[in-house]
Image 1 (cartoon, helix red, strand yellow):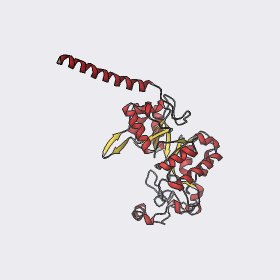
Image 2: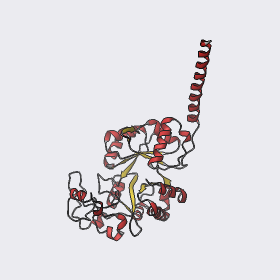
Image 3: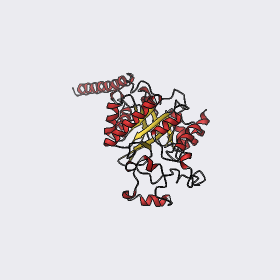
Image 4: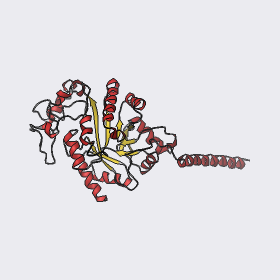
Length: 339
């Protein structure tokens, strides 16, 4: 009797296991719905990743300046310009990584960068973009602290810094610079403002894109603010979006668990580092399976911020779509090895 019960129990257990295996097999065989139909950030099978100049290539040129964007595109031939956007006091969208400008220009006069950082530990000393007009911001040399590969501050004393393209750059200036000469250029931007200012930034960005309609399909917009994500979805659904941190984490989790069919996201680009730190535990995000699953949904996989040549080679061989780097010159040299 006990043997019969044991045999029956084993059959039930085996049946449950088979059902689970069949369930996962079926949901992974069913083609998932594409997040977006047309995605210019996806590279073809066997093609090399796109070069994304992080902040315009901050290791090679003064970050977020027109000079950096121009040289990265026209000299190095990068495919994507990546940067962050802030709204000025008088309603212009400008490129800058931080919400304040002290560490990239001479707003504090002739003092060292170390002195600037010490000064800015007190937030009251910082010069925030939202409190300044474009005219005020344009007075400063944003190549002031840049050092070349020899450690020389080659733009520190540039009297003609505006002519060189070392003023703070606006969205409109960047689009205008390349619209005729580089119609296929791609853009990754992140709207840093939240709340009403973030919503206003969305509106101004959309208005600028109306003037450069070919670029409307070639820009992907990211944000860390949930309300701005909802604003983009509701009012500008035609614009491609990157995955916010929480959305990206959910997507990665469903892929690792093999239940990607149930993920309802609609972003175009998965922009992730090599790993996340979760409660003190380093969670690796480098996975061929993750790349493959994202591609099934027409999602571009873009890793940031990659400045190590071995990491670049690893991602190239995985078939990622783009590598964001501070050193596009180095990435271009690495890609030449594969050509």
